[in-house]
Image 1 (cartoon, rainbow, N blue to C red):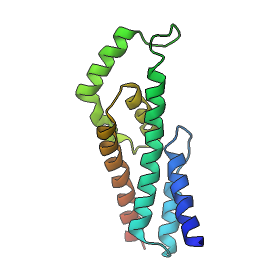
Image 2: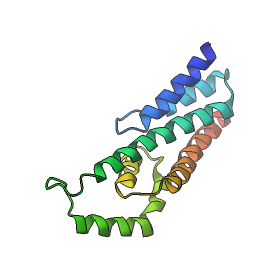
Image 3: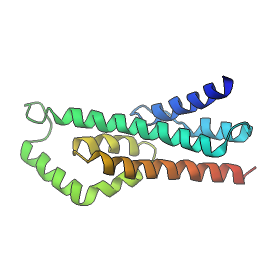
Image 4: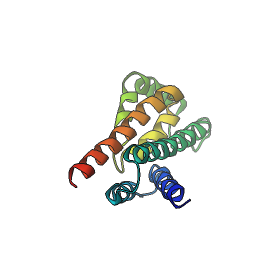
Length: 145
């Protein structure tokens, strides 16, 4: 039961770290890797899944905010939003490969929802970026021991 709780803690840490709050899951992952009590690949999978799910929540919030585009208080006109969405779908979706970056990456996933990025493409790009980051972190951590 203690092992399950540790993995659950990593999952929740990674999920929360993908929110717009300034949280980090890397320290939790590194500590668990250094303890040598857990499966490396399961740790990477759990952290990646939690962090990608957290980004999916941001995407959902962006989709929700997009519903208010016709309100007078919405900061962008309908015409400018449509133009931005067309530009984003042509060039901007690849920026989701930077969703792993601290500070910049989490708001980017919210913008993807606002830009109506398709869910499949969003999950593919964000999942690849987040998983690659955790694999690199695990390799660096284990290479140092």
